[in-house]
Length: 53
Image (cartoon, rainbow, N blue to C red; front, side, top):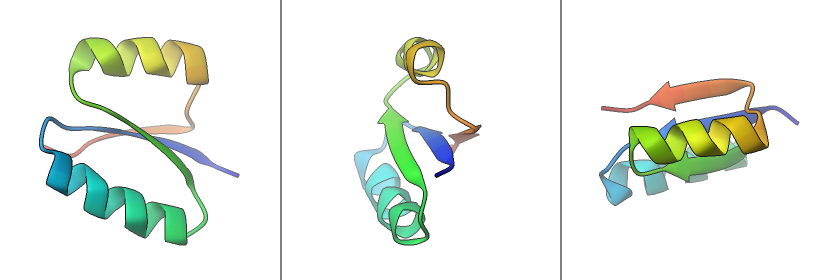
């Protein structure tokens, strides 16, 4: 399963994209800011990082 990390400070945008990507078969995590995204990317090792803003 491909891992996707979404990065955005707008929870509504992230929520919609998480549903779409999860339904498409991706393992999705999200971060609210750059620092959180860097920490999560280092620990979780996503296949793609998608800043949504």
